Length: 155
Image (cartoon, rainbow, N blue to C red):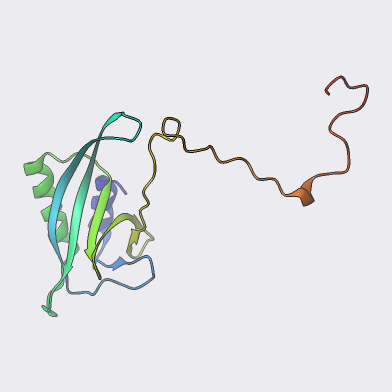
């Protein structure tokens, strides 16, 4: 989810909730302890220099059970961060700690912000020897008709 989409959603909400990939909700008394811009400058395994930027929201639970972050307060935090840190309309990454700090993508289902699973990937598959995955065909879908006829000049 891009920052502009999150801001438009927050303008329409009365309460904020975040749902983990397993369906559990982040407790209502969470805090957003950071809104920032993370820049990653790196070289992939194929030797290509790359730059990535994301907006980072860090969610944190305390034993402050009376706390409830309201949408307009989070929107104000986002707008101040965007202005001071010169954050553009970047993808959002969310940090949340259960057993250890996890990084999640962000989506919205009309009711909750959804923390989505993120995966690693090789960015240089063609350069580092990772074989291209072959298309799998179910043998049961093949017909008995030959693909070539003896006089078809294809063999």
